[in-house]
Length: 134
Image (cartoon, rainbow, N blue to C red; front, side, top):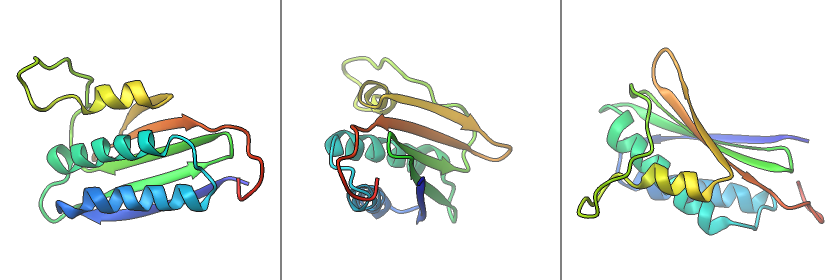
């Protein structure tokens, strides 16, 4: 049975940690124990990008998780314009590596543009379930 859960987060510095906790807590509840470090890092990157580039003052971003047992999909939707691209920053730059990390760690990722805003999603393949909710 497919599972789905989402939560909105305000434009605030503490929202990145709250988004990480929401995703890891939900994944753990669903029996997803593998790759939690990769999942945590990718959620941090997407939530940070949403805050820095996609959430104007007074708005929120939304994090959604879905799983069908074989795949965990995580989406971060914000109201910002533009299509985020994987960059190759110079060694002296301290930013611009988030989507490159997501591309390397997740099994798949992409961007869906909406009339207002966009959704950046990523997916992790899951091992066969031995028992539990999956």
